[in-house]
Length: 113
Ligand code: AMP
Image 1 (cartoon, rainbow, N blue to C red):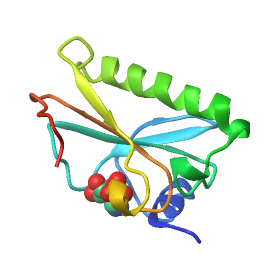
Image 2: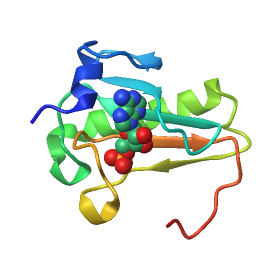
Image 3: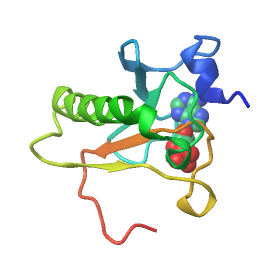
């Protein structure tokens, strides 16, 4: 099933894109929960991390390194940031296209809600 993120990948709807390459896309969250709130998504349609398999090993590693690079580029690497990968219903995932939240620019709390 196609999601709103697929429409962003296909440039059918706009997004505030901060990074793009052949494998992934990163854009600002429309409802930011921190001064920095970027979503990193694979261009390949993977509905959740639970659906990702061994064939996605390189892609998943790439996404983490890109998240780290974006954190550096946005100036939160040294101060610190949090990556969140909500997975399926109880994980709080609403959009069924795998995505990593990159949150930074404020003190994060623990435990998460
Ligand atoms: P999740 O609850 O982990 O599935 O997160 C989905 C995220 O996508 C939420 O933080 C939303 O604010 C965000 N979101 C939904 N639609 C858009 C959009 N069109 N552009 C940017 N972010 C979006």
